[in-house]
Image (cartoon, rainbow, N blue to C red; front, top):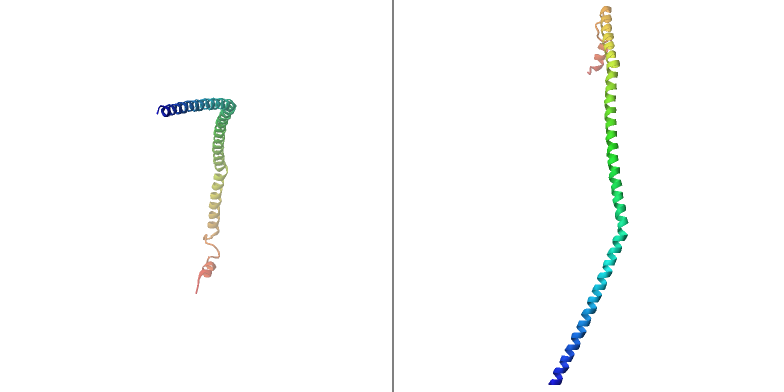
Length: 139
């Protein structure tokens, strides 16, 4: 049995060496893949850095543009508010300067008409009131 034991020990030793070589090969491949991943990550960072910088500049420009837009919108709002106030003031002035005197003149003219009709003896009733009443009669 010494031959069989020695053969089994030799087979186990060969298998152990083969496993050690295989593990070393796998470890070496893992190290190589890790280095490649590290290099790829460095390259990606290097290539992406200008893009990230450009995106930061675009974001800064967009924030500046939005700030300017807010200022312009506030100016337009103030302009429209002051224009509305001026239009209201202008309409008030027009009403006070034109419409109110016209109303007063209309009242004076109505008063004069009433006075003339009273002096002429008109009762103030429409001339064709009777005919209008007959047109409304049904029967």
